[in-house]
Amino acid sequence: MPEFFEKDFILINLAILQRLHGPIPFDIFIERAPSAYTKIFKKTFYVDFDRIKKYTEEKKVHNFFVERKDYDDYLKLVASTSHDFFTKAEGKSVDEIVSVIKDVADLSLLELMQKNAVNPESITYATNAIKGCITTLSKDRTSLVRLLKLISGHPYSFRHSITTAVFSLLLAKAAKIEGQRNLEILGLGALLHDIGMSMISMQIEDRKDLSPEEWKEIKSHPEVGKRILEDIKNVPTEAKLIVLQHHEQPNGNGYPNNLYSRDIFFLAKIVGIADTFCALILPRPYRDRVYTVYEAIDVMVYDRGKFDQKLVDLFATLFVKAKELSEKKKVS
Ligand SMILES: [Fe+2]
Ligand SMILES: [Fe+2]
Image 1 (tube, rainbow, N blue to C red):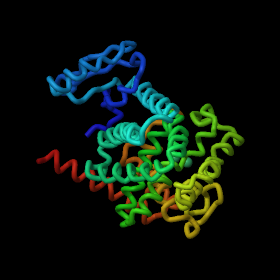
Image 2 (image 1 turned 90 degrees about the vertical axis):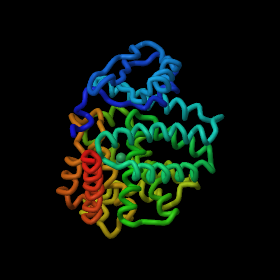
Image 3 (image 1 turned 180 degrees about the vertical axis):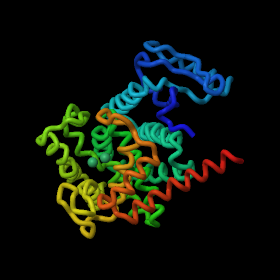
Image 4 (image 1 turned 135 degrees about the vertical axis):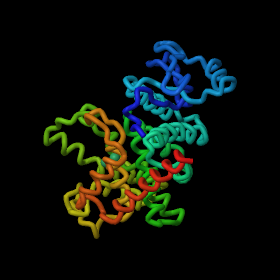
């Protein structure tokens, strides 16, 4: 099966366009026949939702695509509409807020499914757990809105946070970590792990040729993140510890505190693995290419000292299972 990013047309999440208050910055297509795409909306025009309704209800067309060359613009649009939403979220209900998160989660999961990375049942499990985390946070709406505004401020960070939470929860499930409180700590820690990056200038974050001083700034994000969360009561102390420790490595080469395995919080090790994996498989401006799911696993399995060995091996089995399942489906 060809990998997702090798395709010329990429599936998009239409729900997100409903929050767009201007012309679309890319063409939108439907697939008339296998691999035959037709343009239905032209760039710079407004989305005509009546026409979309006709496609979905009368013609039973549910998949809409953008060209690969426009995918980056699509992601930027997703990020900016979500960020706009959270910036003006004061009067919005918790349900509305959760639905925006769900749209972005759906988008991320759509990508993962197209990459053949996870099976639908796992996705349902992870999204439900994430919804639970948001509900916990929403007991203090001001904090919820403030935190979401911060994690959605960068075109890549919101999606990255959500996918990291998904994979953290799936790995925890495989590691037989149970109990509502543990999952809540893990989900929140993963969703908020890079919140400290919101204080780092985007020009630095999107480049690969960083000076030592700029690297130092980037490496401060776990501590900055912990400080941002310090007085938010609905975020449990253990979730704050995840934020602080997600770049520590069992071999002592991590940051900020060069901790060794025995001193790293177990759930922070889980988030560290999911975080690296998501950074490898999803596109970032400073990287020349994205890794396929299996390449990413290979990189991580061979990079032994960086991760907890048992957990990485367990993580790899998640994808073997997903692969077997999709092959079985193809045969039947
Ligand atoms: Fe990070
Ligand atoms: Fe991260």
